Amino acid sequence: MENFDALNNVRVILSHTTHPGNIGAAARAMKTMGLSRLYLINPRYFPDAQATAMAAGADDVLANAQVCSTLDEALHGVVMVAGMSARVRDISQEVLAPREAMPLLMQQTRQQVALLFGTEMSGLTNEELARCQLMVRIPVNPDYTSLNLAAAVQLVSYELRLAAGQGDCGAPEVTPASAEHVEGFFRQLEAALTEIEFLNGKHPTKLMHKLRRLYARARLEPEEINILRGILTLTTQYHGKLKQELKENVQRD
Amino acid sequence: MENFDALNNVRVILSHTTHPGNIGAAARAMKTMGLSRLYLINPRYFPDAQATAMAAGADDVLANAQVCSTLDEALHGVVMVAGMSARVRDISQEVLAPREAMPLLMQQTRQQVALLFGTEMSGLTNEELARCQLMVRIPVNPDYTSLNLAAAVQLVSYELRLAAGQGDCGAPEVTPASAEHVEGFFRQLEAALTEIEFLNGKHPTKLMHKLRRLYARARLEPEEINILRGILTLTTQYHGKLKQELKENVQRD
Image (cartoon, rainbow over all chains, first blue to last red; front, top):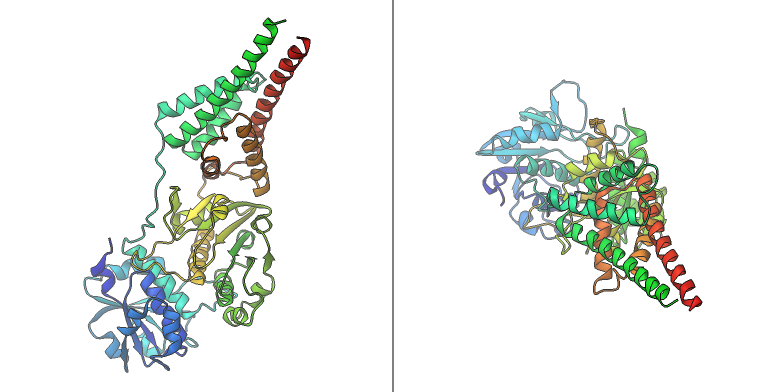
């Protein structure tokens, strides 16, 4: 279930974007994380074939993009703005990591909020900075800070999705077997290992302990226990068959 | 301060990548997060002008990329593989979100570890899946799951970077065995299971797959592999002894 109301109230505002491919890639990044409201302040080229190509299946996000001529227009009705800053600036301002900032932004999504991204080369202008309640910086390699615009949109949208409580990756979970089921397996294992004289040595308890530790870490499922016990049963039956043939041959002596 | 040793031990493996631009964009994404070791399994086009263009300043990552012809080559010496899965599959396997999985991967970075990304259209093959100890799925909008390959690399590298900064959680650590050590065990296991006719049935591959899954989850340590192989060796020797006695009795007839 998507948290439709919350994510629908988040605008992604790209200011003075130079490369139309970045607009398309940003639209795709937004949509993968459940965002749809794209605002463009004076993009150099838009609409543009490169934007459409990079958007892949997110052309609906592009088609509904609001093209604005001023920051005021893009921020109309917005109650909280999180600005993305790549650089350390003169005027010291508290800057948060996306993981800290996005939950704060999500708290306000009963109303309109915005993520504001500056132009590719120089980031946010002082005018844009002045309108932000939150400054956000993505932690990057200090020796190479060249995060692509669409990549930044992807990371922040992802953090927003997690903050919205939509972080479930929809994965099947492991269902561990019950204690008695597991113990039954260990009893059979110990018996089989004793039979083949793996456990007749110096440290039988220690070895069983190590095997227990291994299988405990795997958190065995019921079906897996059935497979393992099936292997042990067949091993023992195979031994039995060999012994029986041996015995019959001895008797025929 | 970068945690150089740890991030230097992380390989990003891209398997059978179709679009060279994605390779370049992935290199850039890696470098922004402090990763540098790129492995390419049979890329359709590489080197390629588009890859270089998309890499921006990460051309050193491209220049040092290892082009491999097999998965074994790319995984040589690797002790833990995290595979990126976009799809829900038949054989249910525990799948973690990047935020859960990357700290587990970071714990093993005193040795080589790998992030494995499948081809753009269809993701990881079953052969590739079988080699992963961790399955990772990025939470996405269920109505639009079309995450670009380089965007996925960006998100997972970011989570890895955050996990690298979180330090040690103080939990006892598992030191996993290398890929080739693990494969040696699986070969011996398969041979032994074939001998006792556990694997003569309808679904030998499926059963081996399930066993691989179980042991992948356990993240076998070298000593544990030695124990398991010791069990298999003794089982086989015991069979041999019984068969030899049988043979001698038959000859005495």
